[in-house]
Image (cartoon, rainbow, N blue to C red; front, top):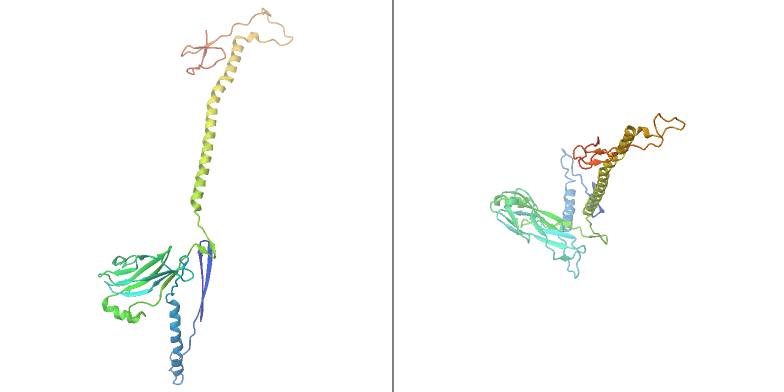
Length: 315
């Protein structure tokens, strides 16, 4: 049987893919309901050692990597926490071990940050900056998670808390060593700023876009306010001119039509009216007065400049 898996993840706009293939072989010993044949019984017993011999090789792959001493180590690239599983009793204290290495396997002096994962037993346990975990004497049974993190990447180790009466039974069936620890390390790959030999720098474009948007909106608002001020000032000037222009013209025309209608030139060839002298002077133009304040104005004015009252002709 062959199992394949495809993993894909993105780190700082860089897509990484990984393929995993696992092969498993099964041997038919006997079918259900059949009696085991006497002649075929020894071969399965003889074939049993090969899987047992391959077990140590699989365990070696999961053991913690041996660190190297380097004169110029690089950036953190891997975090190993040992052991990955631990069986503990209430009231016990255990020191977990963490190792930070670069891409070449060189040990770094970087210390991870330790914390307890949320859970039912989180309030019954404490951990210090060195990774020493202490279980309260009144803690109940259950699972507890311990998290070690470096540069935003964390790995969780599993702690099973059990009562002293069940400790030996669980230790015999858990697959842990005599100390209640697993020989494997919990590992995590730490994403660094250098990927594929290129240094990537993250820029906060959100703040720049926000400032640009505020500047654009402010500029548009200022332009609209300036345009509105100009239109308001023009609107205040225009009513006075409209009232004094056409109205005064109409008033003068009406005055001329009422008081000086006889001064209009006669059409060409029309006979002169009886009693009208060609050289007769025009009568003086009548003025106007404001009935409110008594101010005098010329005949072409329509409204008082002080209080806006409509003017009347002077008798």
